[in-house]
Image 1: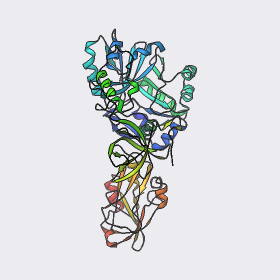
Image 2 (image 1 turned 45 degrees about the horizontal axis):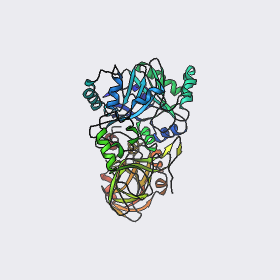
Image 3 (image 1 turned 30 degrees about the vertical axis):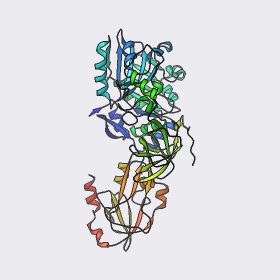
Image 4 (image 1 turned 180 degrees about the horizontal axis):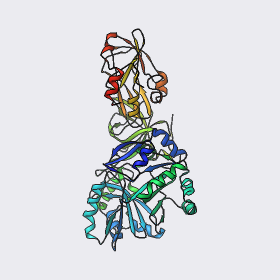
Amino acid sequence: MQQTALYNAHLASNAKMVPFANWQMPINYGSQIKEHEAVRNDCGMFDVSHMAITDISGAQAKEFLRYLLSNDIEKLEKFGFGKALYSAMLTPGAGVIDDLIVYYTEFGYRLVTNAGTYEKDMKWLDAVSPNFKVTKTMRPDLSIIAVQGPNAIAKVSVLKPDLAQGLNALKPFTALVINDWFYARTGYTGENGLEIMLPGERAEQFWNELLDVGVTPCGLAARDTLRLEAGMNLYGHDMNETTNPMECNMDWVVDLSDSLRYFIGRDEYVQYKTNGARYIQVGLILEGKGVLREGQIVYDMDNNEIGIITSGTFSPTLKVSIAMARIKPIAQQQAYVDIRGSLEPVRLVKLPFVRNGKQVCGISK
Amino acid sequence: MYSDDFKFVDTHEWVKVDSDNVVLVGITHHAQELLGDLVYVELPKVGSHIKAHDVIGVVESVKAASDLYSPIDGEVIQVNNEVTADPTLANTDPHAKGWLIKVKLADVSQLDNLMSADEYKALIGH
């Protein structure tokens, strides 16, 4: 079991540590709901150093990534160094191998991929890269701290006064790169904030400085409710290698605009899209009793099974249970979910549920 | 935390004598700690007859659902509507204000077979 550079800092903040993707990670520091609320209303921080950073350089780095990724990194250059892009890596059959963020940098490109998919991702990169002149450099020497919430940039600016102007000017999906420190305006919460990559040996000190300016440490449990409210996918739950991007709201990260660009999975994706999606991803709001959970079956008004919940929880912001589900397209806005043998009514909504602290989907109750 | 006037079962419910043959039932501090922030509690109906080891309800936190098992045989004579309205009561005060149901025992001697506080503490490694 691996530990991040912040392991001792978590223990010092009374974290409950759990195994996650072969890492010892904090699940909460007491109350996941209080942590969730801190991110929605003020500022919280997450240790996400378990995620994998891989730098890609070399003469054919761009060609390699244009072939490997569903989204087209070609469009990054016009924004300059630090620009980020959300993308998928697809199987030849157009299933999602992983979702990731790729940054355009002075040294080439930086990929940030999931912890749970680390080994298969690396195997996939190794399988595809020999045809290209590229160098892959894993960066286990770096830590990642996500500082998220309406006051996130203000709090980091207090600690980095020289960078305040630059941080406040950062547009979404861009990064400020200062030597070994990488400040990206990205996140997984639906709030404003930064994901900061920094040298591991500096991580504990910076974490403690953030604590000192009142940033709330938040665990994986709060991270999950925040991302679910924000309608963001969790790999291995909302999508996997059998899920087409059309089935998990990821069609916007498949870029077909350059008809001459062949990328892995393109043909199968186009075929699926042409035939029309068999399944779509929707948001569910529970109108009956209980809590929606992954694996529960969704039925239409005529009692036909139409799909399955891929992520479900109680929403601390909306105070009702919410879920993401993969279902056959239906005309109605109502459906039922089997919660331990009882069919409970749910309402279908467009994702996300919450953005920037506010509910963005209607609640009828 | 686990005082001697309580009895326990290995499914992490507690029983406390309220009066004569009437007991209160709840989930233990250890159970609420494992579950985390509670958001939903479903309890048996008043008047229903319950049996030891039967699933009689559910306790759900943000992260997980956990069945509620009856520790004893008897008739439910009251449910704690405050805890169904605000399940976090079972987090903040699991052994008092967070009680779940009041039960008229079918057989008072059944209590003798339940775990003592010391036995329960040994079970959960305290």
